[in-house]
Length: 129
Image (cartoon, rainbow, N blue to C red; front, side, top):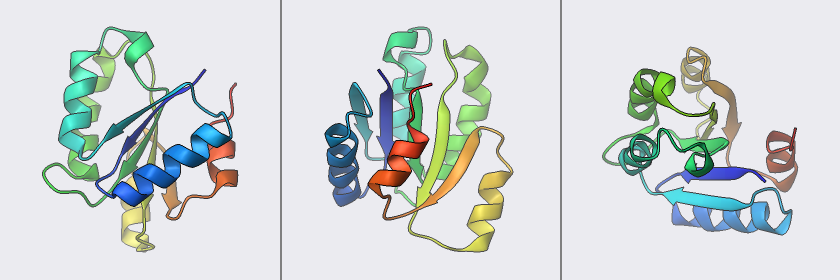
């Protein structure tokens, strides 16, 4: 079953996304982080333990401390040390084309998802392969 990480300082998004994912039984476990720094610390701490690493990571752009862009810069350096591949989705309320284009520059970002994220979107992105 999927392990999903939500990296977002918006507690309403965290709550809503968790409820949607759980109600559709799309994940076995959901990790929640309020900023990119705490998420990065977790990944570094569990880099060699595939069972504790998320399969999917939903990453907000605008957060205090370490934002989504800073997280991605660190992730590029870390990913070769991780025990498994993590699928990253940028999540933002921004519909700014510059953000969308910038997200495409990162090969680790699978898709740019505009908030609010629907049940259908979560279902499509978290399909168990």
